[in-house]
Length: 333
Image (cartoon, rainbow, N blue to C red; front, side):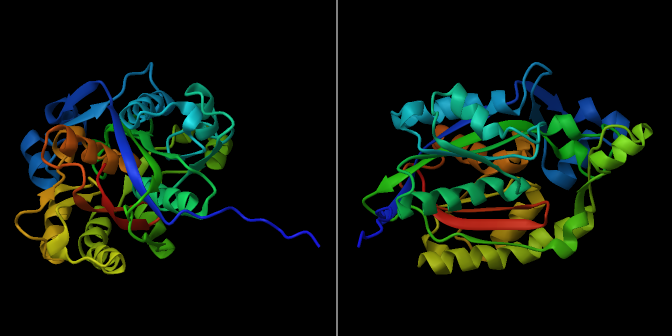
C-alpha cells in the first residue's frame, strides 16, 4: 500500500526584510480642514496627524504594492522567482476578481506562486504575517511575500468628519522565510462582528446599482465606539500575544501598533506597562492612517531612521474594520 506523503515542516520562521512605498503627495491639515469645518490645531490634538501621504490619480493600490514588494525583495537579496506565495491585505483593490495578489505575482516575476487577497482592513498585515508564518513552518512555502496596501483616498468623502481626514495611501511589504531560531511568535487574532457597523461603507454596490443617485460609496466610522474599543480592548490582546510568545512587557524593545490615532497609541502603551525605553512607532504623524499598510510602513521608518535595529523584539498589533484584530511578537529584520 502506498504511503501518503505530506509537506515537511520547518521549525522556525522570521521576517527577512521589509519594504515601503508611500503616496507621493504630502497633504497637510490645512489642505483638508475647510470642507470638514476644522483646523490644523483640532486635527493635531484629536489625532496627532500633521500630514498624510496620498497617491496621485495615476497610481493604484497595485502600483504601490509592486514598489514596496520590489524594495523588500532587494533588501532580502531575492527575486520574484524565489517567492512561493503572496498574501495581499487590502480593502482598496477595485476589482472583485482577479485578485490583486495574482496580478502582482505576474508583475514581479513570481508566477506560479500561490496568490490571494485578504480583507481584514487595519489588521490585514498582521493577519498576513500570521498566515505566512504558518505556511513556512508547515512546509507549504519557503518564502512568502506579505503586503499591506491601501489607496484610501479612493474611498473618502472630503466633507466627512468621522474618518476621511485621517486616511492616507501607501504599501508595506515583508518577506517571511525559514529561520534557525524563532522569529515570529504565535498570532493572537479574532473578530467582533457585533460591532461591524462601527467602521463601514456608506452603502453597498447593490444599493448603488439600484439607486445611482447615492453616489460613490465612502467610509464612515463611529469615532467614540472605535476609540473606546481600540484603547481599552486591544491591550489585553497584545498582552496575550506576549504571553503566548513567552515574553513580558519588559522584554519588548519596539512597539508597532496600527497607526490609527496618536491618543490610542499612548493609551495602549500605558495599559501594557511597556518600559520607558521602548521605541514606539508614531508614523501616523506624517503618513496618516493607511489601514493595512500602517504597521509595515511604521516598521520601515523606525529601521530606516535607526530608532529600531535588526534583531529587536517588536510587539505589533493591528485592529480595525470588521471589527477584527491580530497581534504577534516578531524579531525585526
